[in-house]
Image 1 (cartoon, rainbow, N blue to C red):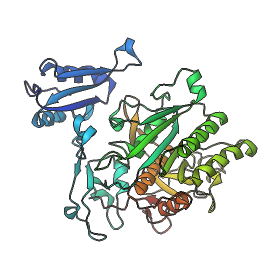
Image 2: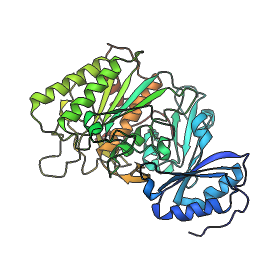
Image 3: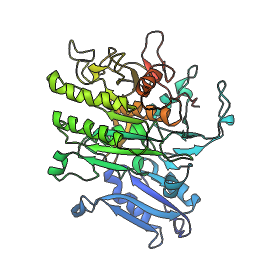
Image 4: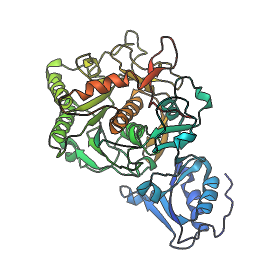
Length: 436
C-alpha cells in the first residue's frame, strides 16, 4: 500500500495513548517506519516479544496522538494493523478498536431501533463493523442478516462469575486479550516441560481462537470487562498439547478444587473445546465424576460436538465427553453452522447437540495476530461466551444446589437461540438483543 505522510500529527505528548497491533508479519517494518518517521522522539514505544528476544520480534507499538491524528493514522493503516485507544480499553466502557473503521460505542438503546420487548436500558452497547459471525449472535427474529452492521449487547453486569478454558495456552499480546487474563493454572506435565508461561504453545493457536470467541474485546460474544462492572475472572488451565487422559483428569480436578475453594459462591463456565475420545469408559468415569461435582457447585461445562461428520457413519456425535449429554446430565454440546444457520459439513450432530453457533470461517485471535477458522471449537467458545453473558446479566439465576447448569442449558436451547433456516433448521445462539 502507499504510505502517505502525516508530518507532526502524531507529535502530541499530551494526547491520548493508542496501541497499534500489526496484522501481517510482512508489513511490520513498513508499519513501524510509517509510525516512527512522523512522531516526536519518545512518543512511540516498540514492544517486542520477550519469548523470542533473539529475533527482536515486534508485537505492537504504543504512541500518543490526538484523536484527529489517530483517525488519520487508522485510515492509512487500513487492513495492515489494528489501532485502538489503550486507556479506553483499560478504564472505560467506550472502546475504539479499529480495523477498517470498526469501533465500539456505548449507545442509548432508545435510539437503536428496537421495536418490541422491555423498556430500553442504560448500558446497551454496540460494536460497529464486527466480525460477521458476531452479527449472527445479535441477529433478532424477523430481521435480515444482510442488513445488519453492528453487534449489540448489554453491559449491565449484575453477577460475578469465573470463566475457565482448558487448552494449551493463549497469546495474551493480541488486542482481544488486552484487558488481561486473571490467572493461569499449569499442569504438572506443562511445568516439567518448562512451558509454564502465559503463552500459546499450539502452532494453530487453538486456545487463543476459542477464548477470543468467548470473551475477546474484538471477537468475543461476552465483553466481560466492558461496562460499569468489570466483574468476571478469566482463568486459563494450560495443559500439554497432546491432551492425554491424565491431562484432562488433572484439568477438571483442579477446576473442581478451584471452584470449591473460592471465597464466594459464584457461577462458573468451563470451556472444553474438545471431544473425540473413545477411551475405556472405566477411567473416563472418574472424569465424569468431576463433571458432576462441578455441576453440583453451579458450574456449567461447554464442549464441542466434533468435526468428523464427513466419514461414512460418523454424522452423529460418537465420542466422549459429548456423548454424556442427556436430560439428566446438563452438559452443553455445541455444533457448528455457517452464518446463515446451515449445519457445517464437518459438524457432528444433531444427536446430543444442545445448540449451534457460527463455526465456518469465523474471525478469531491467533498467535501474533488474527485468523479465520472453522470448526466446532470456535463455536464452543462463542457458546461459552453467551453462557457467561447470560449469567453475568442475571438472566439465569445462580444459587449453589439449585441446578443452575440445567437451567442455563435449557435457556441456551430455548430463548437464547432460534431457527435461522425454518422449519427444521438447527437452533443458533442469540443474545436476545437486536443488531442493526
